[in-house]
Image (tube, rainbow, N blue to C red; front, side, top):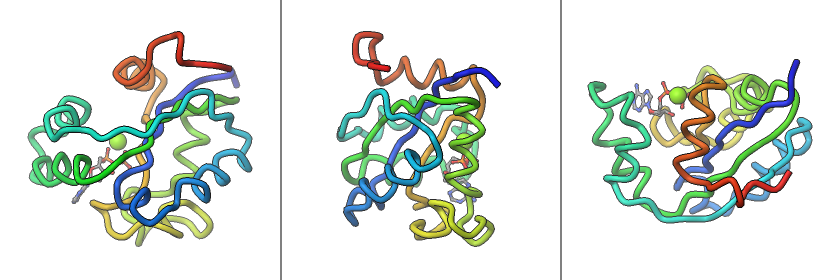
Length: 140
Ligand code: DAT
Ligand code: MG
């Protein structure tokens, strides 16, 4: 398995509850390295561009408002098979289905307010990383 990078976002429900450190510990304990990280406030429009793939889904408006409802921490995680490993550490989208010990099982409040985003494939990771970071900000 090759060394990869993936885009992670610690969502507003988690930053609000001061969970950034606990979530980062889960990534680091799983062997993922945080090679870039910043805390930003998105506008609903910026969240809308990021989540454009979901624009036909009934929850799109709510999702964009939620992502702009408070600070987020955007970060790049690096490691062997980072995309899949991060999805494993995150747990299922709906916390009710998430495996014990995963971030969403422990911290997510609902299917909508589920604490973290993670890219779903290497190709989407490259696009999502470029949306938030320039090459100079990635420090392996
Ligand atoms: P994931 O974040 O696990 O990749 P996704 O890409 O299917 O899940 O959806 C993106 C986000 O949209 C998800 O993290 C939370 C929100 N979402 C998904 N399904 C939803 C639903 N049924 N109701 C409300 N929000 C939902
Ligand atoms: Mg997704």
